[in-house]
Length: 110
Image (cartoon, rainbow, N blue to C red; front, side):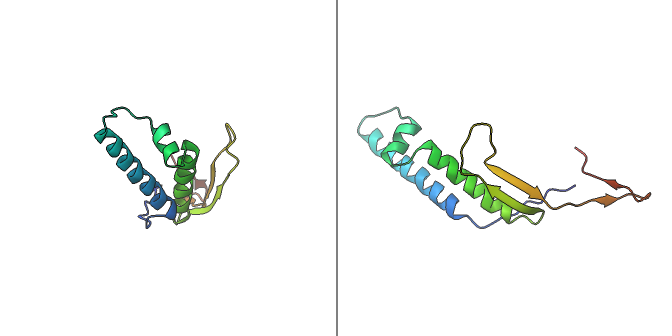
């Protein structure tokens, strides 16, 4: 079974994530010029009114948007519950079965 790679246009969540990365780098560079040398991402994000939960949400939403564009995916559900050990994304693939010579079906081999 071949997994299809789709080059989807950049998603809105990816644009927001790239903006946060760019602003973080600019902020670090500015403070570095004033002598600060060590930074935590948590501190930089908090100064940008953002946190790791926001970043996780942007990554989750970007992945879901890209998955929805794949022809072999029939459904993508996103959960906003953010509960430990619970899925953030649930994916349903389109069933593709190969018929063998005797009429039986075979699924993907891993």
